[in-house]
Image (cartoon, rainbow, N blue to C red; front, side, top):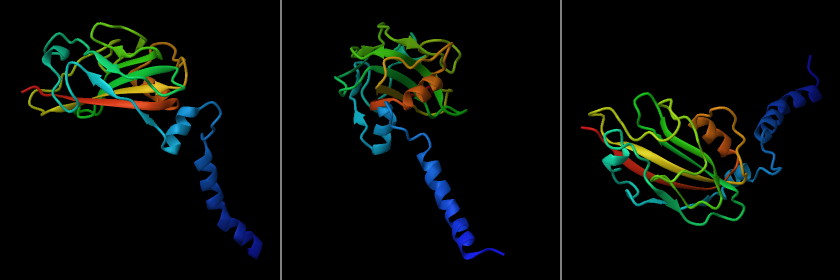
Length: 191
């Protein structure tokens, strides 16, 4: 038989568990990126390319049908506290799920451009299994695919990734340190 005090305590257990779970990983010690995301204070970066504008088609030379070159990307000054950048490009329209085309991390905070023959930072292994950029290459007749070019300003100099990280590893490691983000979307279709 439950006493009134025991019954009250059992009623409070779910609430206490919810509060405890919500606070897991919410440490703010030198983790400004996670704090910025939690507080909704994430700054925006302007990411542009001379090759295409936001929402427009990516020229063939940057695809598997052309030279498979990485387009030149550039951005302005990041917010105070930026110590490095990370870049990820993916295709959420891929038939088997999001396909990651390029990942670069530990890009110096002084950098304002990447791609187009300029190399800076460390490249990750893309979902094709190679290190570096692999251009848009959707299935023929699959309609236009959207390629998200995402630049992240980070509050750490280095992500500390060992071995041969994949693009998703870069994204996961960077997510804890993001203080600003820029995105540019290009499309590509093979008919």
